[in-house]
Image (cartoon, rainbow, N blue to C red; front, top):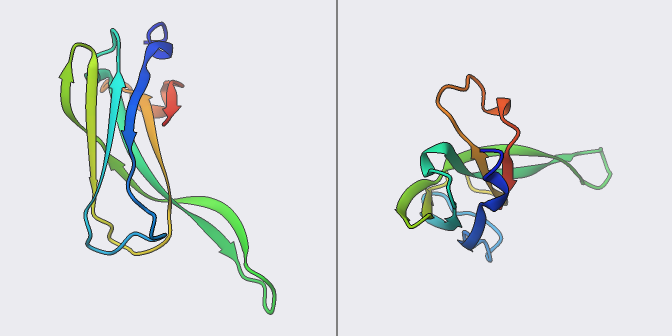
Length: 126
């Protein structure tokens, strides 16, 4: 996996449309990522969408200031298609809370025999 990891390439990415600035409760959103995997099997990868929110610190009679990012939700991508080393993943998201979020997709090496995902340092932010 370490040998092949640098060769995994992002071919295309259709992000969730957040042009309105917020995610609406109950509305379905869809993200899609296409990766060229080379010799890596899709079974050896995990891909997920993270929703984060900036915490705010309220000071009486003072301005609100941006704080640290807090993960509000993690949503897995599902393999939709795999052909000739090219994998298409889709994530369908229906928010359970409204709000303004920052989003990122994370690709990581996966093996069901690892007790903790953090045991393998291979991660790509897409």
